[in-house]
Image (cartoon, rainbow, N blue to C red):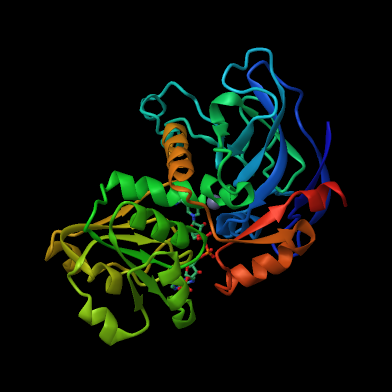
Length: 349
Ligand code: NAP
Ligand code: ZN
């Protein structure tokens, strides 16, 4: 089936319209009519080749919300008309140790990304959510609660689960002092979730102007990372840090904020960092860790939690024709706090 998409064709040119072919439904497949798709910084990294040359044309988008339009003959968990989501993965081996544990994102045989992944099972390369529709096996499709704002739920599929998973893994609890570093798509969800878990949340940002907003999102305090005196005053006081900075940077000033035995989890920069001072780790038995999205079961738990607590993203809606401006603004940290594409603008183009 011919499908309208927006694609990146090389590292430098703007994204533009394109047509792709979606596969015929296999017995386990779900055909999803896409309504909204969030814009993740990973879309930019991939489209621009920051992580190595991708498989052009790249059709980004892994924060997908839509309705089930058709189901394969063996589908049991979904019916036509259901509100559903697709995140960063569309397949994994489903039999290795990680998959058995519900950690498909760490599949020992490698998971298939929603876009720019070689599809070992169905052939070709995967194309993401900047698209009218998508075909995904039911095990990688999520139920989305109907009571929350549907378009603002799209970012939960990546920004949401990527921040939820480490906060749960490191058992953030009521009263903990938690710092979220970088107020963008991931960061603003980190603030909301940490607050919902009862933590004392500190927004650690380079942008003084975002301070007031951070408080509206639920932060109890704001720490401007460029202010050395402020950073010094907070040294040795944090129980957990979630670092969403998307590029190479100096982690040492942040590590110094942690208490004895505590952890900073990296989710942003997937690239070499500036040299880490071993003394900062050794002298206080601190941990520097990382975390990748979240498993399917955990993603469903997060969505259900958002339904119960009415948690969604703060979004700015755009038409697909404005995607390149959105990318430029995100690269200047000018996003409040997630762009979401109204896929109607693609369907009607
Ligand atoms: P985003 O919306 O662009 O937000 C990033 C924020 O980081 C900016 O708004 C800015 O916040 C801060 N920042 C940017 N450059 C900085 C610098 N040089 N130094 C200090 N702070 C800086 O990005 P996002 O969509 O949240 O994604 C963040 C990163 O996570 C990306 O690299 C993305 O690829 C990655 N990611 C990882 C996973 C995973 O599974 N681990 C999943 C999704 C995304 P302030 O203005 O507040 O300083
Ligand atoms: Zn993402």
